[in-house]
Length: 482
Image 1 (cartoon, rainbow, N blue to C red):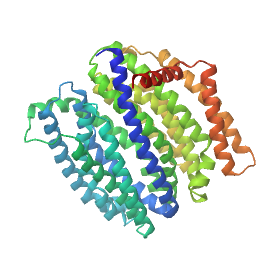
Image 2 (image 1 turned 180 degrees about the vertical axis):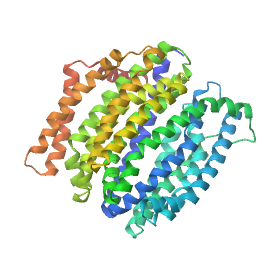
Image 3 (image 1 turned 45 degrees about the vertical axis):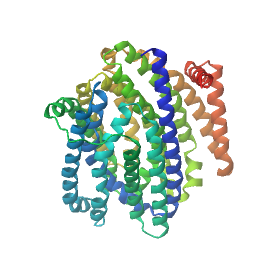
Image 4 (image 1 turned 90 degrees about the horizontal axis):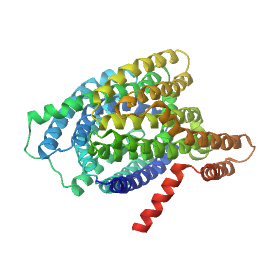
């Protein structure tokens, strides 16, 4: 495949992926605002406690299995069916363990009502065992248009269910129903639109071959998920449900950006990189372009979000959620640096270096755990501060292997990141300074957004930013081609 064809293929699918995520997260954003105004912080705290264990359990079903199918260049029907049965059986076992452990989880948090919530919410794991293979099939065959429709219907329908139940006073169950409904509808729509069904095929040889790659990805993902949920775990255990709710709410807005942009780029880039095989030159070129694009788009979005955190929270969520502002700003820093981590891990994964990814987890996570354990002895805020501090260390470690794997050196990566970093810092300083003006939040928020956009785009033009003009040039070419 020519370089131009690769570009066209990547951007076409990335456009669909962006459209899917932007639409879905746009609807989710509106729904979350409505629910945050109706429900109590305690309801969100309970769901955040449960999500720690759901996320960890879900790793065994969704991580590793799908990645191994995408990474294998010639995955056939036997491979897909084999991995499906492995995933489904795993989900039944995991849900059984979760069901029996629910009372212990409730006892750990000293919150009895967690038992039924965890048992019902846990059904998501079984459903995900099927949808994860569907997602792998769509990604493998670069059919990202399919995601657009499944996500659209799932998000809309689940949003309606959640709001109706919240208005009728179902409290925490409104959030549980929203999450479950979204997964169910997404799976049903993909079943209708994607022409893949598990067949009566199973190969022990195929399972061993795929899992030789997959188990390392699963282990790395498990370690990462355990660590990623560690702060929620300790905040829920040693502090209050309100504290955990504010921390979780602070993550929501940054997650909207990372799920839309970083995840979209990663999900499209991985199958394309895998298709390139072991060609270091091609993988390096695409990794550099991915890093430039994601940093140019994500850095200003997260920097801008950190700057407008106060007026945004006070206007949309009300004063009830004021405690989430500082967490939102800290997590924006973490999420920006995670962009670099994601780009490096994608290239390692595409090169088949799941062993390296697993080794990196054993280097990074002990340091991260130590940071959390030290921070939890001081305050909830200290726990939040430990997140961006850890991300600096994590980013540095994840950049290291690609010096040899694809010859992408530290200096090159810093050089590729520097333009977006400088532009974002300038934009942040100016837009954040507006918060010190004695003006209404209704005036402050739009003023910050307008000023931020003008500064970032204006400086991109003045400095002749290469990525900015790359995007402009590509859009023009696409319009001309269409």
